[in-house]
Length: 261
Image 1 (cartoon, rainbow, N blue to C red):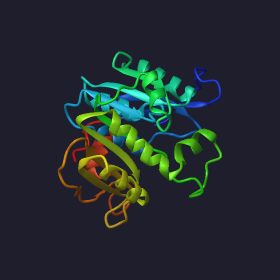
Image 2: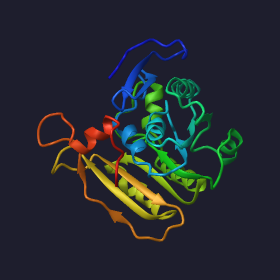
Image 3: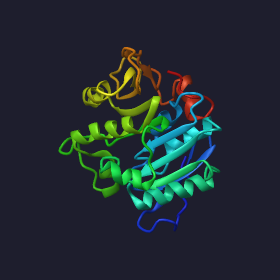
């Protein structure tokens, strides 16, 4: 739901005000840049029950973190974003949605030097839950977005994905969970990075409709675990026909339920 209100808080982006979780959250995000959607909501809803500390890598305007915080009253979150204007929107969103006391937004590059992230305030071996929605495609694949912010959010070198996973592994506490959402076509590279660093890996394929190929996957690994990998049954977002969501996902997008997996 878009409320389409201009926001002078950001110099170079025209922004919209968009409702999530059945109007429980109202977030500002760029009109023409990378825009949070279903992936961000599912990522935030996938955080395990009882988690008390969250790290959001490449947080954007904070959608996934704020979804998680809406479900977990005790959750404290650190959001890491490299774009100063998007980070400013995330701070504004935290304030306007009542999360300012529980959310800290810092500027740092997930794929940059670890020392720079630590200097900005990101700890090591510290977070119970880490979430990320990394850029989707290798450069040279797909169609590069004309908007610079959207292109930066959707394209990166393949080696950078492994850097994101390594960054997450270094920040997770012992027994902490690391959750990424990613296109199913990139599962091989994603799994290669997770298997080097985590156990108890669970993969949840997300299908657009029953019987269709998965378009997205959620993957979760546990730091320090030696439990085997589990490939979960795929779940369809929609029914055979129409645009309505399946009841499970409709409840998630309305903010009535978390993702249980």
